[in-house]
Length: 87
Picture 1: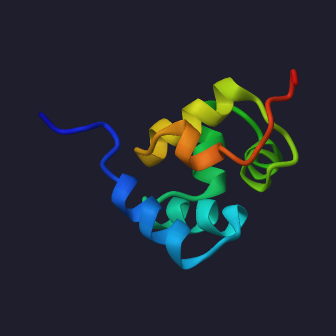
Picture 2: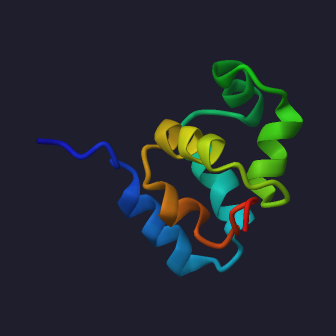
C-alpha cells in the first residue's frame, strides 16, 4: 500500500539542506507542479491567503492540512514551526 505522503522523503531532504521553512514550502509547491495561484483556485481562497499560510503569518490548521494534502506530505512536517492561531 502506498502512503499518501509520497513526497515525505523530498521534504526531509529539503529540511536537511535548508533551514528556512518558507523556502522549503515554496520549493515543495514547485516540486509538486503547483503554484500558489493554483492552490488558491483549487481551495477556493485568495492567493494572499495561500501566501500568508506558506509564509507563516497566518496559521489556520484546516488550510494547513489542505495544503499538506495537496503536496502529499504530513501537515506536522510541513508546518511544525507555525503556532496554532488559537494558541
